[in-house]
Image (cartoon, one colour):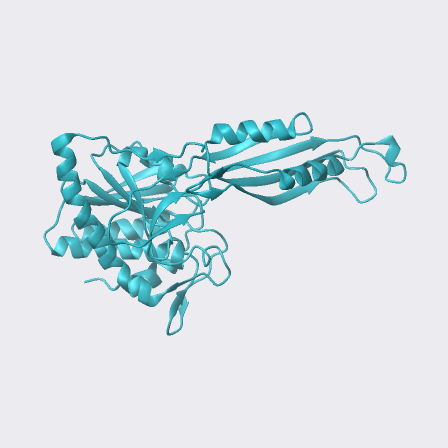
Length: 350
């Protein structure tokens, strides 16, 4: 039987920053094939394969992503934690799902699968393509670091740029030009002071100003400027865009880059619950059935210079995934008898 700690170390040691996932995909596909699973690689983009593996006719699928944020750094550990890029987001989760799959296989259970996709950290091209894979799955267990709780809801995301234009001129004569940077700063301050929508279940919409660019030199009035921002969305994307556009008006051009709706997620009795303020691939995997969101590790450790996952939590995770799959398979049988719909439920504005 595979050791989840050792497999986590191995997966961490294979670099897979978004755009460079082939090596980890090939390693994982080879491992799953050796374990007796049927495996396909689906090219999400050139040289960026998703992995789909299964036993029997999968009615329940465990899924997470193979890519990580930069920069890559290898594994280390102490008595309590395993460290490394992807330790909790999401190499440890991959390892726990693979070990869970092997344990289910050893118990003679079929009718489940594994789906590992590229690009979740940057654009979610893997999930978009994976949604085209023919399947009969009724439940999708998506893996993200939720501190071993079942998330009852997940915020969406709206990434966008604001672009302003000015008139270049000599900085000694500001009245002869118009600073695009000053215009942009005024808009950003207005956005920060705006009351954005809230949801009784998911909480508040939040806004992060992530990148600023503009100007050509300190002694030149800036002719252009732009900011890259992201909302964590708790209502509909359309509603939030309407609100944003009314605030910005004609002061700046808005370029939308990525959008993902919030969702309400399935829960199962006996599991502690939480709300996920982050965004997942779930809204892009609608053809894989009703979603659940569960994983070891803390999102607060993800993307950090000391990314880590607690060993005790990681060791417990395979059994939790096994429990989820075994609880859901009877649900699939019940669904087949009454044919109720099994699709994600999207949040509506309060």
